[in-house]
Image (cartoon, rainbow, N blue to C red; front, top):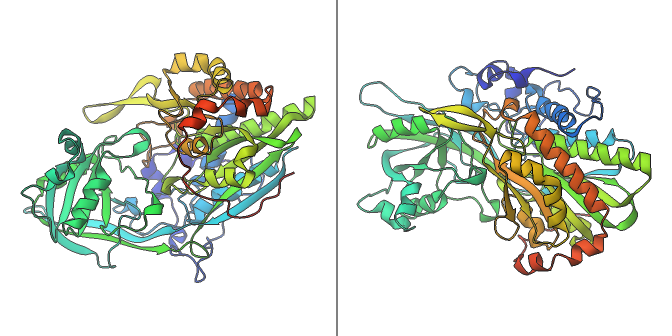
Length: 535
């Protein structure tokens, strides 16, 4: 029976999280997956969803995934009992290494086990550093109104504080956008500003996939100049918190940093020179027993068992991931069911298809690269990516408030390897979608956002949609931020492309990838974490 929480605003959702969800927030003594209180089994059979048209079927599976994401019984990172005032310390999300982050992988594997014809379904853990918050907050003295405590969220791996936090004077250094106006010289932001022993404050502008322009360079320079903490206001929708990815290859940085909404950032700017206390109390679990994520594999064997089409999507994310992860997760389950049904009706497909839910996405763990290494890049005819923002609605801000445009989100790209067989097949199938949704088409070597760059660098013919809606990485990225109409066109295009590629010789597809191979560059470097069973 489907819960209805996904249809409620985020504050109402938080109001019904039971206090039991706050138990075991730091995990068990042995660093293993923390228990939850009387959780339902995510492998229990879900509502029967008929295999119908691509969009509606994908959407229904998406809602099942979001039911798991929003089920408070699975959530182990509620860090407060004062939900009315500290709601931002109890924001659900399938974050890497959290109990909920593990549960969504269990759920994904369970869905594959329910599809007749899909075999060798397996879940593969891989070691990964895990950032585990215990508490985070910001308190700023004001001249007249008492302490100001805005909603905050930590920027994972930027730095941690003692449990009591750190104190310092706030110094507003402007914006990372100004860095671009100054031709990229980060030192210009610190001219005539002594930040030693202080908490810096600046505003950052969102870019594709919710990264921010120049922010990391600013934080690194502030740390070098002796700052003790940082506050970053993200120019997101209204006053939304917008979480930021982090490349964990670079390790734990020294400057504890919290993110605030744009409107709160404006208020903090007015408090330049006031004293503040900033807390990012957290632990970093080392890769291994203390820290890990998962990849999953599910195989649909074809007549040719030596070559693979791999269809993948990340399943971890920061918050409610409605438009970010939801359509890709639902779409992957639809494609698995569709191709398994086709094989049942017509006989084995020409070559094997592998479906994979990948982990550690939001901390740039590139579970996808690990999967491709386990399968052998030389064996993969095509990697098909169901990325972020597949069917996001478009919004603009009017007087500071997000307003629907009635059109699709514009920060979305269809990325295709420069491949003389792959590109025509993709463009033929996606033609109407590109035209009706103003979807940007980009060659893989020119714009390769998200995880597709890992497959591309491994010289695997690659295509997929990746992008962002306005609410990307925010707690308000709920199911209503996607359009079933847009999803229908997108998933029909994916289905038709997959059918067209399966009709081509896999070796020919790889042989047609010469230009892309020449542009590929070096892989990121993640390796297969262990053996897998291939039918």
